[in-house]
Length: 152
Image (cartoon, rainbow, N blue to C red; front, side, top):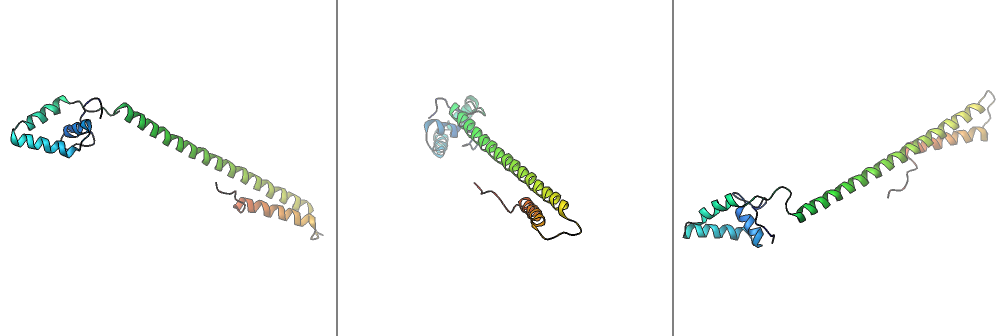
């Protein structure tokens, strides 16, 4: 039960008067509406009271009660924090991917340079040929994402 009576923004059929009274007294809005109908049918005054309350009762501003405003603020901050955490995680993943790609390119270029220095007319299948080719293969594998870090 709140300390003031407001027209309801959520439980309204015509103007929120019955919904606001129901929220204030902590009862079902249908019971308040039924009471207005009964009073209107029996004494004829229910409609006049409803119209008077439509004019007199204030509408709850968009901010709501302090507790509702606080809850919305907490929810908004929570969603903001979750979004920022996701953005930071995405940025770290992208940064990690860029470092991995740069490392792969360095491996490929180093292997190509080493291979170019040992290729000649009388090239023999030796360690000086196999090692650069393996180095380039490792770089290509890293670039293609064969070695992925575990997902957390």
